[in-house]
Length: 254
Image (cartoon, rainbow, N blue to C red; front, side, top):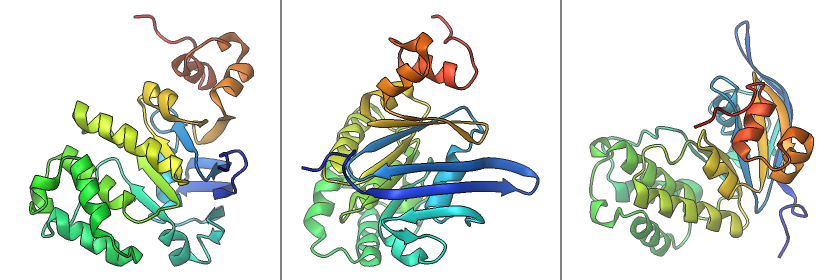
């Protein structure tokens, strides 16, 4: 099996800059996400994490820099790039008039997923949605919306999956199921970008880290490489490294 370090990148970002009028949200960002890895994306509020993910997903236009998904330039071959990826925002908004089951059917048709029903049934069972399959999107709680979004994102064989705070509305059972599903997704060869303020989650799941601060990359690499880059934190947790990397000083003591 090819390791993430050997696998070709599913995502390449070079010189990406995102502006909102005079405000620069992301500045000259460059990184890769490899097949089979979980890249943990962390940073303070306003660091540019969501702007980056939305731009990779094609929700926001790319005006400066290059974003390539599975070899497809997002600006030049948008449809081909988007066929390779799935995107789960922090608060998914399903179609109000479609049932959970109809969302899966729609997703399967959109991405051309053959023989999708057995996988869909397994996903519904995993995320405890089997008995809710006839519920309308407009009836779902935030946690159920997140579970539905994961079912749709996992359907087929996505090569790149973008997750923005995917556990924020889940109960403990849902969190356990989601964490295991994320690990299995990467094990099957997908590149996963996981953005979260839950640093313990990132430390537990991520193969590598991408730390943003004020729109700039301040570190990209493994946790061990982060400890080497910040010598004062050679035995530190990701929380300690986060504060050192983003200029916050030491983590507050309990």
